[in-house]
Image (cartoon, rainbow, N blue to C red):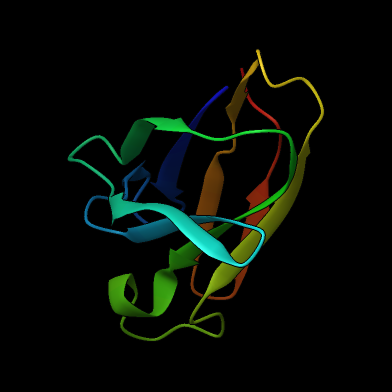
Length: 99
């Protein structure tokens, strides 16, 4: 199974480049990195079960209410691709299961 994410800055209407991201499973860090110039990370491998993707939003946004965004999601089909986008602003964020 592969995992990808895309972070968009709702204030600027642009991709959020340089956001630190880590993927966790069972208390272990599976992968870590930063979003590219298009706000994306892709190709990380996972397995079945509950995972957490953690975004270091405090380092990206100078003044934010949410210094870290943690999204837990369940992988029930290890063969499927899972895309978890994040739309970010200083006082709100949203996410959904992408394709």
